[in-house]
Length: 111
Image 1: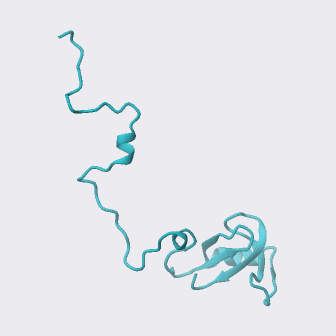
Image 2: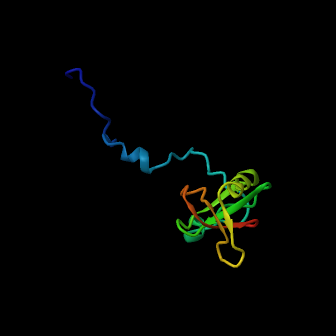
Image 3: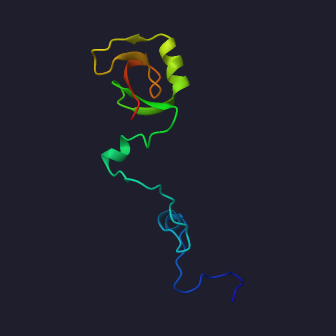
């Protein structure tokens, strides 16, 4: 032998590391998923998670994002430059927590 190490027969050298990225070892821990309905597809993208105490969901009419914010945060947003027109689908003109622009938003307790 010339002193260089050769890979074992049957084992492939993966110089780009794709095997490590796209395969999980058998002894990997399972994902810790919470109980309840598991949302898939579009519902998973546009859902905001379970209700949390002391928070509301702000839905923006422009960027269509639904963001969970604390009651203190939404209070500060409403006390700063904002307008309220109750007959609209998005009744609050306020700074959106997702896109950070003044847009028409809806505030939902149950989100």
